[in-house]
Image (cartoon, rainbow, N blue to C red):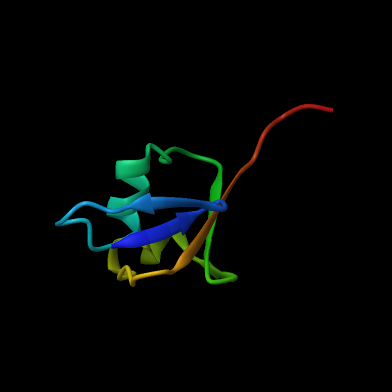
Length: 67
């Protein structure tokens, strides 16, 4: 299945069925992140239970320090 992450198409492998698994596969795990699916923020507690669907658009934002 093809998912768009931050504007780039990514083919999720078989067995990659949840948002959490997708983020692990894409190497987008760690603290200080916010994730939206189809322009709706998904709380971190729901990442393990949010199913993937063909063509969904995922936006990952990372907080950074600086000034």
